[in-house]
Amino acid sequence: MLENSIWFKYNGDTSIRATLAAFYKCETSLISNNEVELYNVLKKNMTKRELKLYVLQVAGFDDAAIAKEMGIEDEKVIEKLKHTSNRKMRQDKIRQAVKNLDTDDNDHDEMGE
Image (tube, rainbow, N blue to C red; front, side, top):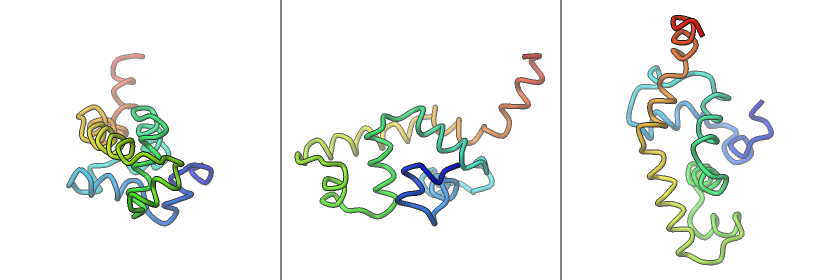
């Protein structure tokens, strides 16, 4: 299902799980193994531009290539997007979401929802 995503377009050979584990400096076993759900968590918590910037950074693009790919001419805009993207990725909300994806289904069953 990720074949049509921007992740697959730029990082087809790199897993989201491994990338997030490296970003959060934890074992991959602590991150959900469902790539689609991980991508959806990122999509839900970041704007399109922030997500695209993060994906391009993971793919190894430099600032000039990112600016060209995203059609942004102002360097300050790129710096601001990098700052907000990294800030959002460091938030507990995203970190906990990617680590707890596997247990979410069990929580709903126990609560009777």
